[in-house]
Length: 291
Ligand SMILES: [Zn+2]
Image 1: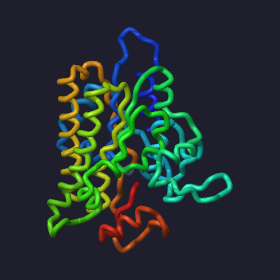
Image 2: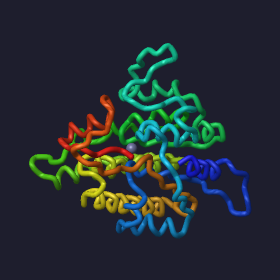
Image 3: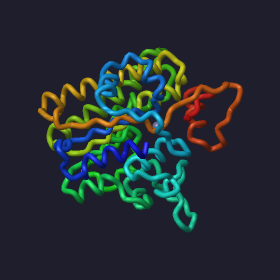
């Protein structure tokens, strides 16, 4: 992940080489998407970009492999021990007092991030940026971003409430559609800013695969279908950038913040209090663990 981050930063900060650097960088985060599943999926848009671009298959997630931790490592290019956001639902200050900032006020929690972000570097260079966070708490890492979107507050409440539900109104298909629609909505909200402001750096976390894997596991048909749905969204993003006349001047970076593993449902290996375990209970499922 750090290497991917460096690649994005280099596009922004490097002195002009023979080829002019990109004017826009879109960092598309596929939350919870495993690279081996992405390779097997019918994902022609991302596959073509991978062939035409550069791939790095040795990237590893941070540890603990949680969304909020990885999404601070991304813009800081540093490990949790360095940036200071080490996971969990509670964030403690230097005197070991709980700060009520983790989920509900991620912007306030930015003071706890001990490393500079590439958003701050972009701003210092006179560039604009967007951090579109599906879960909201990723915005702990948005320190210095010009604009932010907190999906927890802006996405459709009915779909958001069903993000871990195995069925809605008795329908698995509807539950899956809700999960997928969250990524479409976040992309639409991001594109509204892109059309108006033409930002230089965009980080967007498309989280549908994460919710689907928490609910049905990575071996489910729904997980593969969702990865393929996300590929369609990326195609729509590229098409819209083409209509806006931005595509030729845009570089894309794709990554995930972590993957998923299937585990034996008779063995609960998440420690007590772990957020993943709460999700398992909420979804009525056991044995889905972030990896
Ligand atoms: Zn995640």
